[in-house]
Image (tube, rainbow, N blue to C red; front, side):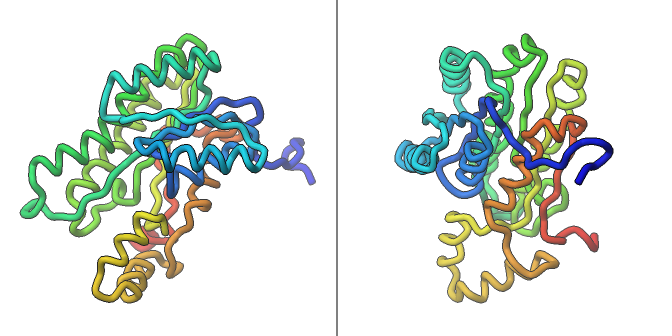
Length: 264
């Protein structure tokens, strides 16, 4: 089968060098493993060495190529150090996935200034710090692909998630500005906006409710298709954005929400 003269093919990342932050579990781990299976060398980055190395071992155990880099994205020095290590070891970074992020529950009345700053330092400043650290080498090569993890909470407001939702709106804005400013420099920047995803973090939070199953049903009902997403479903979208097949896509907020916003 051909489409406009081009043979249909599976997205691949052969010979690409990628770095995924927050890759020790959940969506980040799924993205790292998906990229490795698609042919990339993947730097798995996380603040937790134990979970990060576990992902590297799974990748290597299935025949993929990966290494671990400890990283606190809130620290500019850490980000600069990681950029130096990647460039020294591999000579370039083709794909940067700014996935590291934290959550927060609260309204304006119940969210403290310290909590707001904590969310911002990871979810927004972290994206800024690491993207800025790798930007000079991408500009020099006139080639680079940045994928940021936003949220459906960065597209529509989510009740009782003031700090988190605000930070994700900022990630969407940051994404669009990077894309616009560097479109002619050969650098693409997009973000993923998932609905609710069944990650280890979400599973743990569900167990804190008096009735975890009822809480799961309520979370699932937010999506029109009536269930939570799996991390691998988000990773599949990341693979498309990371691949050369998406070469005309930049500055987009890629919504993967199971129909959450279909009626809004």
